[in-house]
Length: 174
Image (cartoon, rainbow, N blue to C red; front, side):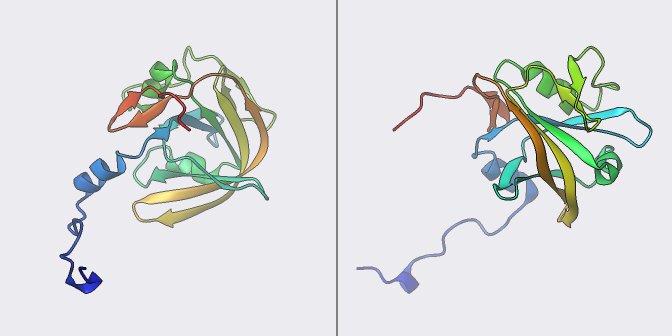
């Protein structure tokens, strides 16, 4: 029997950003649009896949935004934001809100305004409207934590991102 200390070194230790991105791409994530209003009142939104549940009591969620994002100031100062979880047939919306080439991401997009004043994507699979609880530096990103104030859920399959592309959700196993 091989002793633990006799085993060769395991795993890659050179954690280059491109290699790390490939490894993390092995993990399938949902796709959402996070939105808010800038101080001047204009709607701001972008595609994220860094969204996760943090706590049920109190109801908290988290997501992150890269430090060099042109939208960072709007989210860091806004009291509220909305997370619209996209359905499998909303790839065009995901691409639109991810594109730096689209000047007005909300132009022609069906949205409504939550009572907190933030734009919400119509027909999203699920929506959470949150009060910004905190914004904390974390490496090359800012980590946003929000307390869920209101939510809505529709029916359907989610939009999923894995391996650098949108993928379908397979059969439920087990």
